[in-house]
Each structure stands twice: as C-alpha cells, then as structure tokens.
Length: 331
Image (cartoon, rainbow, N blue to C red; front, side, top):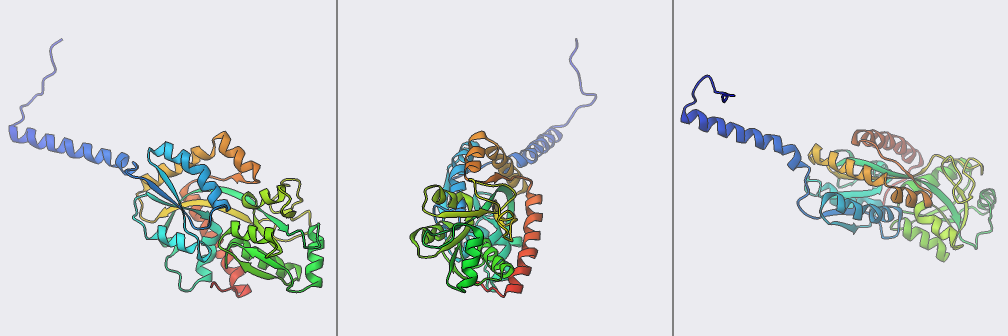
C-alpha cells in the first residue's frame, strides 16, 4: 500500500506555525488535568479542638485522602469563635484547593446572623466541596442531675429555672441554637454555656462543670457508653445505642443534628473541586469508614458541590430567623 500523501506542500514557516498551534492546543487540553493535580501537602483545617466530631472525621478521612491525591494531608486544629477563626483562615488561603475546611456547617449557616463583625463571608469566600455526614444530637446529663429520662429533665428544669447549665460548642453553634429553641418550645429556662468545641463541652459535663449537653453523637456517645454521661434521647428518626428519639421522648427539635462538610476557598478551579468531591465521595463509601461512622450514630451524606451550596443557603435563612427571634448575639 502506497503511503498517504498530502495534496499540497507546506512551507517551512507554515510548518513552524502548525507545530506551535499543535503545542498550544496540547497545552490547553492538558489544563483541566493539571488543574486537579496536587503539588504539595494539603491543610485540612478543623476549627474546633481535638476530640470533637469534626476532628474525629478529619482523622478518619485524612489518611485515605492523602493516599488518593499522592500528598500528605495535615490536620490543623484551629479552635475559637464558634469555628470562625478556622473558617476565616481557609477563606483567606490561596484558591488552589490545597487548604480545606472540615466542620459542622451549621455553624457557617448561623455565623452571618450572629456576628456583625464577621471577617469573612461564608457564601462568597468559601466554596462547598462535599457534605460528609449527618450525626444526630445526643441529649445527655451528668450523673448528679436527678433525671433518668428526658421528661424528668424537663420537669426538673421547670421546677428549677436557670439552675441547669447546658454546655455547647460555642456561641451561635448549631447545638446552642437547638438548646435555645428547645427551651422556648418546652417553656423552660436554662443557662447556655459556650466552650471551644464539642469535645470541650462534653468534657465539661463529664466533670460536672455543666450539667446538660446536646451534642453530636460521634463525640458524645463514647461518654455515654463508658457510663460517664447519662444518655436521655437522640435526634433523628431512629434510635441510637438504645436511646429513644426526641419524638418518642416528647421533645421538640427532632430534626436537629450535626451536618459535617468540607469546603475550600472560593475561586478554586472547578476541576480541583470536582476532584476533591469525587475522592471524598469514594472514601466515604468504603466499608470501614461507613462502619466507623455508623458505630458512632452517624450516617454518611455526600452529594455534589451544588447540592451542598443549596443546603447551606437554605440553612442560613432558616437558622437566621431563629437567631433573630431569640435575640442571640455572638461574642
């Protein structure tokens, strides 16, 4: 078979131009792939103290994400201001996908309504990557509180206005707002005491510094299992560790809980966000991760960045209304 021949000749200048165009085209074609590659270690910021739900999840996901992207994933705890210190750090990081935020995104939804001097805009400065988990809240008490059921706790609170101290993850945190809403609907009065994260709040109740906690199951159930706290009820539709649901216990707020998600700096290339979303989604579907989350009362929740963005906008509006009505101000 005779070789295929071009029907015309190209000049040297034309050949050089064609070569340049081909190189340029190859470079453009390579851009999407390059845009999702990781070139250095990734910071995974947890804006709460070690031991809380966000921290536990970060340490579960981090090693697997490191293996998937071929770079180290360094967990950085940056607690303070109900998660806003850590969120602000990510909001001001380079927009290249190498700095991530893992937190209870309910705190992001409440921040705009709580803090007039907020140093970042959750909607404009952060880009949702993937939802991670929904964890029901556990209502638990210190052993010194004379209540073995939720109804006994309500009765005690009504008989002793402002005697009970309810620990939370920080002013304006989702579990703080839940406690405020519960008190209003139940007609009780108790003191809300902020701590630097859910782990610190749980330890405060274990020690007896505070008497009551409403907190994520991942961080709180171990204390219940170890008999360091008395569990009374859980939010959500199913019992966890044998505890009745809020609905079964006659409590409001049964749909509350901790929604954990991963975000990065706004302006990060869409290809990088898509890569992160895909890798995190695969990690969360591995049997060992699903089992570990389930063992602590959580349920894996994934989805697209767009779905996460819609959830955050809706939650910001909903929680904002509750905060305004209750007159809660961030400190």
